Image (spheres, rainbow, N blue to C red):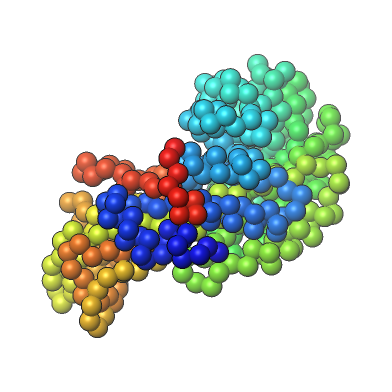
Length: 382
């Protein structure tokens, strides 16, 4: 994708960046952000991609995607304030958290965003006082046993409940503009997307019968990436989804909410060995990054990040990688074979752009890893 001299993930580039900026270092490649966005856009022509800020809400990512023509999916007041501060047009944003405080609604409206998502009667009633300002999507639940993270366990109404919500919206004078769904994160196959689209096609007819013609279907996110296995062929993955979408009315606006697919491959974490010890026949290497930092996704996101040493010598030996804190749970991997490492040697965690830095803590007062955003080898200051 990039020439070696432009690729910040190349080993010599990582070494150079660590020498200059120190370790640990979260290296964000904006060229890869663009590549992932355009790859998904090509696989889903006619679908407006709203980048979900949640997995990597970094200003450099937002401005890069804005320049590429992306829209944005917001889920909190903080995310609304971030895009507003970066000058993102409000009409290119949607607020998709199904459950909101009144202050979140007011703050989002103040930012100029007027489209929201609901999935239950109590949430719908919150919008009666804002009926003249807003248009809502009803989120429908489709449970996907193949998804790594089943978001429909927490959000979405049964398809059978849509009719009741439409009647309530009509009584309250609240405008329903369409439907949304999310099949879950890291979907293994597109079958649930297709099923959800087909069900929503029938439900959209009911929306039209209860008021203005339905104008939007939001198919959510969940598009998969590979954490160490064979790369995902996103064109082939989306082929059945394209076929299902092609059967919908041409007047319907189609939205998707990709997050991980765009962000995950676009960052690595460079780490140094800060200490080592032999315990029970294995080398323990204590790194300056761990589970309380960018590797928290191993706990919260059910992901195992590939880790590769840039240094080391000799035959592989049974090894353990541990984080820097004083907590015994702070262990990245206990089943590794690594060449013998010395204090100061470098390792790289790959596929670390999604749900890593954004949810890291400063436990034990270890600061969050520094983010370094680069674009074709050039440092981007934000």
